[in-house]
Length: 416
Ligand SMILES: Cc1ncc(COP(=O)(O)O)c(C=O)c1O
Image (cartoon, rainbow, N blue to C red; front, side, top):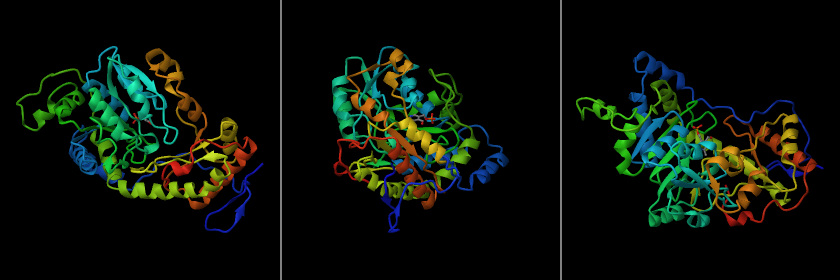
């Protein structure tokens, strides 16, 4: 069975059929064109180690755009999260509340210090940590909450910050996917005590591998520099604040070299236009797939009021009766590379060994197995998006029951 759906603005009704054998990849990294110039500048200036002029520019840009007190480039978001665990002085047995529907680094960073991830279920609308379940998961060992802004769509940060303040807990935002998103006009990453960005090739703004720690509580500023510089006060030495640098505390080498920072600077300069161009693609998917949502064969993303997302990802939730693997396989045979996402951590060997689930994790189980991510990269054309939507319609039609894809109606949140 294929579902017929109108192509917006065309007046045509399209039956889902393969019209091209051109392969559409899931991701294609976008280059602004300035990356090699800036790398050449770093090269000719003989500035290759970390914390040179390009790194400083990136720091300033992130601080200005986000309002964060201090930004520090790292090798990755994983490294930034590991720095956060060191800064919070997580000790063996300390508990850290986080979603199970997340990337392994969210948990691993704390497990490296002996911390215990306590997995809490997610909201049905955004797939983000369900703030209503956090309080019940707090024990005398709880030290921190780690909200993950899935798909660059903000968590309910007012409620999370209120719980954390009242219960004496720290908040580390895993904003790996959240660069240029905001919650109530506050940039993601700048709201918790600490925040972590990713500039991995698959993100919106990239440097291959890369990340940043955002230090929003000034009490952590100096220690953050020390931890990032092998546990030494070398940053203060370079600023002329001390006459030699020495080992101060436990740390590691978390700073990237200038070539990475030079690449990243070319991307940050264009971050606003990158986001705007991705948003056009996101919005086009949202429009194209509305008829399939109306037919009850999938659910589109929901963006709550007060949240501005960054078009990091376009995903759909299939119905429980739809065979996701079969849909993915059929998309592949139709030349469209789609992917699923996280295998919930609480159900993985590492999650069972190092963490524990609080509650039944019903939403996590139900939603994670139904999610498909569609190609989203700058350069994807309207025609390709139409073809993807048609292929999805046909693939779902071949492999689904046609029950309602969820109990939430789009009216529960503002979309787009
Ligand atoms: C939610 C989340 N946290 C952390 C990371 C790790 O980011 P990185 O690859 O920059 O270490 C990712 C990577 O995709 C992620 O999705």
